[in-house]
Structure formats: structure tokens, C-alpha cells
Amino acid sequence: MEATLQILNELEADGVISRYAIGGAIGAIFYMEPFLTYDLDVFVLLPKTPGGLPTLSPIYEALKQRGFDAEGECVLIKGMPVQFLPAYNSLLEEALVEAREESYADTTTRVLRPEHLAAIMVQTGRDKDRQRFATFMEEAPLDAAYFQEVLARHQLTARFNTWKTTH
Amino acid sequence: MENNALNLALASKQQRRNELARMPMEQKLQAIVTLQQMAAPILRKRGKTRPVWTFLPPA
Image 1: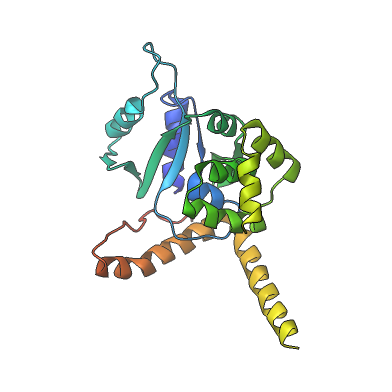
Image 2 (image 1 turned 60 degrees about the vertical axis):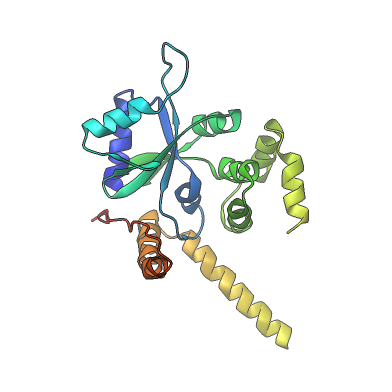
């Protein structure tokens, strides 16, 4: 995975992406016990384009030039399927801006804060998010006050309270 | 008595999970690869294939 992260850092240094951070299952696993997963979800802020519409095409093109082709929704980078997800709402934009720097072996990367990962699980609300959320809340080092602020800022408090009462 | 044994078992289980959560990320990824390898034959029997990661672990 280190080589994969180095490619992501190159894309950021070259301005292909403005900022990236790891989210999804691997992001969660930075803070909790490992579980079966297959993709590395990478949230990205894209540079502004003249037309104004964000597109992932420049990322795919830059990766293709480096010899990494898209396979379905992912690009296989150095043996790891990577899925690029644009920050498509205010919660994800905030999560990306406030993501933390973490080290993996000798390489620095960025990972979403646990409070944002938990809030994204609440917002996404799939069955697998709900299952993961319960374990994540037990194991991840969450700042409870900050988590409540994030939920309130993104109108997720009511849904979180429903989840709490049904567990 | 039975409740005590059950509580002890649950506490031990939780402690193990917390230890797993605190493992270095390099070890966690190795654990994921092991899970993928274990899942591969089961998925194959169901007619599904998912790639097992092939990256090299850090030295």
C-alpha cells in the first residue's frame, strides 16, 4: 500500500487533485479492528475547471499515463484497487479539509478524522454502515463533543439519535 | 456464577478487539489480505471473484 500512497501523493503534488484523504473501510480500519474489504476509498477535492463542473477524468488520465488503468469503478494502483470519490457535499468537504496526516511505513498520507468517518456512516445510512458504526463507536478514539458538533452542523443529530435508540 | 463467566468471556473478547484496533496499520493490512485469501475460495464457489491485494508489505 505504501507504493499506492506514494502515487496519490504524486497526484496531489502535481496538482491533479487539490487534496485527498483516505475514507471508507480502510479509513475506518486506521482506528478500529481490521475487517474484510477490497477497495481503498479516496476522497478528493478537485481543482476548479473552466466549465465549473468537477470531473474525475484528469485523475484517470494522469494514472493511465503512469500505467494504471481503470477496472470498473476502481483503478488498480500498485496492486490495490483505488476508488476515487469527489467530495460531493458539505460534510465530505469539511472532512477532507480537517483530515489528519498519518504515517504508513515511511510514507505520509491523510486519513479522515474518526468523528467525520462516523458522521459519514450516519449520513450514508446503509445496512453495512450501521453494522460498522456500532463497532466503530466502541473502538475508535472519538472526541464526543466534536462528533456532536459535526452531526449538528450537517443536520445528522436526529438520525444519530434514532440509531442510538435502536441499538 | 454463570453470569460472571459470561461477563469474563465478553470482557476478554472486547479486550482482544481493542488490541486489534491498536495494531499498527501495516499489520492490519496484512490481516485484511489474510481475510481476502480465506474468502476467495468461498466466493469462487458462489461464482464471484474479488481480487486479493498483491502489494508488498513494508520492509
